[in-house]
Amino acid sequence: MTAPRTAVKVTIGGEEFTVRSELPAEYTQEVAAYFDKLLRSIRSGAQTVEAHKVAILAGLAVTDELFQARRGDAEMAGRINTLVEELTRLAPARRGGAQSGEA
Image 1 (cartoon, rainbow, N blue to C red):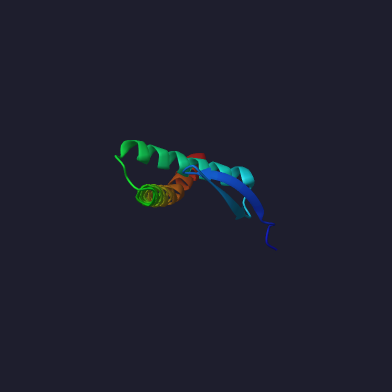
Image 2: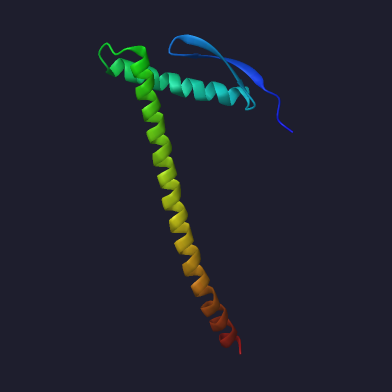
């Protein structure tokens, strides 16, 4: 069953939007605030850039963050898998050593 959709008013780039989402209103507001802050940051660093270009640059920045996070997650998963493999190889040797030490 699908969660009920909630309408949330957010302000992005000085414009008010109503976003309908199944996610909690606080989350939607947090996401909108993050994007709005990014827009303002890009706008303040650029000289007379049109609003749609600022939005495109902000979209690229968020997409870059997503790709970086995915890459980091993949690297972390690889490290964890390597550690699990090492522990798996060591576990039988430790059990055998503990048993022979008890005899």
